[in-house]
Length: 177
Image (tube, rainbow, N blue to C red; front, side, top):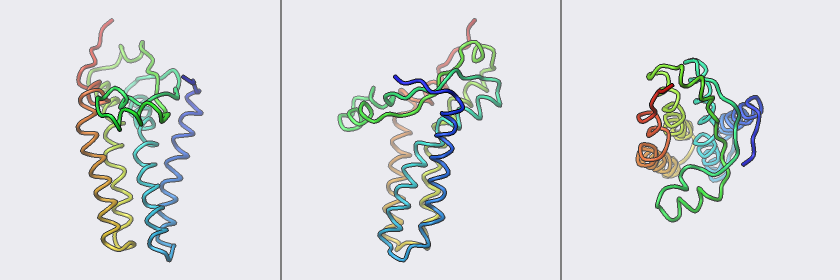
C-alpha cells in the first residue's frame, strides 16, 4: 500500500476529472466518429473513478469529517465472488481515502451516511455525462453503446456497493466512542 498526502490525492482526482471533461469537450471537434467515440469512452471510464474519492472528501469536509491520507491499493471489488471482476479489482490500483477516526466519531449519522454515499453516487451518475455529451455528436448506435456501458456501471454499483462498498458503509457505520 502506498500512502499519498491528501493534497496530492485530491490533485490527482481533480486532474483525472479535468481530463475527462476536456475529452468531452474535444470529442465533438473530431471528424472521425470512431475517434470521437474512443474519447467519450475514455472520459466515461475516468468519470467512474476520478470523482469518487473527491466526492467523499468534499462531503466529508462539509460535514466535519477529516481524512488522514490517500492510499493507492486494491479495489474493494476484489472482495466480491465474481471471478473476472474480483481478478481485475485485485490487480488494478485505485485511490482510497483513510478517514480520521476521531473526526468521524464526532460527526452525526446523516453526515457520515452522506460522506460514504457521495463516492458511490458520483461514480454511478457521472458516467452519464459522457453519454449526454455524445448524443448528437456520434451516430446513435455509438451513443447507445456508451449508454449501455454507463447503465452497466450503474447496475454493477447498485449490486456491489450495498454489499461491500460505500453504500454498505453508509448504512452500517455505527458511531461509538
